[in-house]
Length: 143
Image 1 (tube, rainbow, N blue to C red):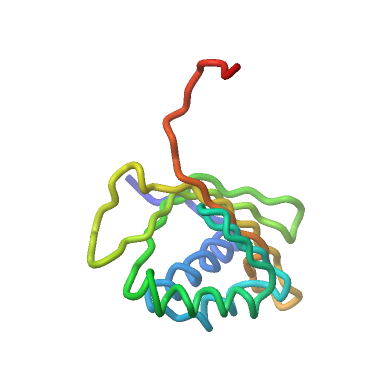
Image 2: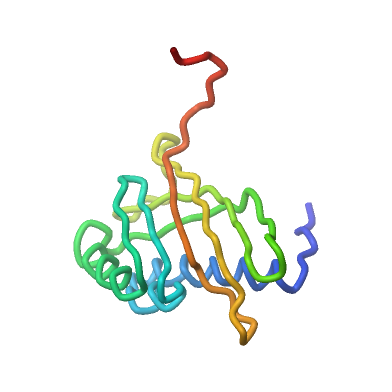
């Protein structure tokens, strides 16, 4: 199977997401924060809300020094689309690999939504991120 052909902007957007993943792999809070906009928002699966590059840097420093020390993140693209010329929405599966684990149990897999903006210099940065645990869909109505 061959890789899909990507436009220049698609490749740049995916590279911006990859910068975040790479920063996580190195547990580098500075690089993680710098991949985000000044007023970026981050909402974790647990509901933690963080707004702004500096608060994101602070929370990631704490997490990398604590519960996520040495962790890695995997991701698998599910969807990418553009809203105009300078906003992209990327949806992907992801998960945090702790303690040398190479594969997550299905109940730990997440679906992330990342919104990115194209800067005047052509670089794409993360403006918003949120993820949720993936649950099996149901067709039953909830009353």
